[in-house]
Length: 361
Image: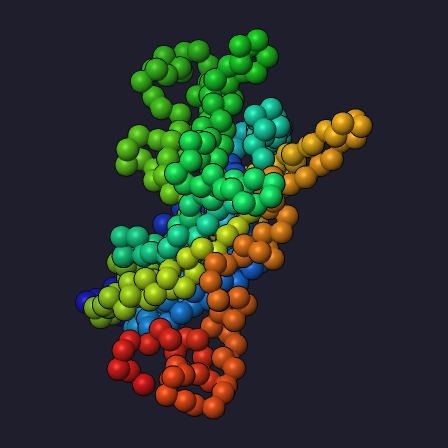
């Protein structure tokens, strides 16, 4: 428990830490993300609001109660899934924009050459990792046949499309093509020969930072969306119990488990860190939307038909959420009806009431 003066000092230090690269003013990093669609943004934003509600937090740095700075709460419109980080933080040098465009083109070529079609991911759960970072965890959904009767799901023999995509992104930037037309495109390879003497003992940052591609412990392999970061060192002037937060995470996960989202559009971003450590979408200095290739079917008469992969065109209508949740997620009132013994006692109340602990009014 800290006095207020000490607490304010720690909070200012937390903000400066989150904006450390932005404060330098001469560095940037490049990342590839998939933005959450509008429906997913709404669901995750509402879930975050419910989960963090018991904290009664404020963004006022002078508050003695729970404090979460705005920079630690990812805006709804910036929620995303990180795909890969081709180039970690580096000093901006002449020709930086041309290099970024070259890297974006390399990524587009990889999508086309390796036929990385769109695929679906499914919300698995929302957790507070380490008691600090609130994240939504996803898993890949298998491919259906054209008639929709057969699905090669998580126990199928096909490689996970997210793992395959990340592996191919890493490969296209750090290796040379057999015909030597594609050269490695990393910070280490751009160094002079003298500076690359210890290259073999060094792992490229794209492998270190891309989820699931680095050494054990260097980067997690989750498909995740960061929702919020709790500044535990300066959260409040008094001890805060997080048991209720963890309980709400479990109950929210049970409600939203099965919600699906399509991964078929990517954003290649270069940011200087103005949005903090978890939001590269805020005021990027380079921003390009890159679409996954479409599947094509050639008919016997020679006509070519383009179609989306795995029937993802109608995912919003048929696969948005598994279960009776629909669009009534904690925002609307449940339709009232005459009260009977067989009817749930929560009828006529907000869905948020369903998440109250047993016995509480």
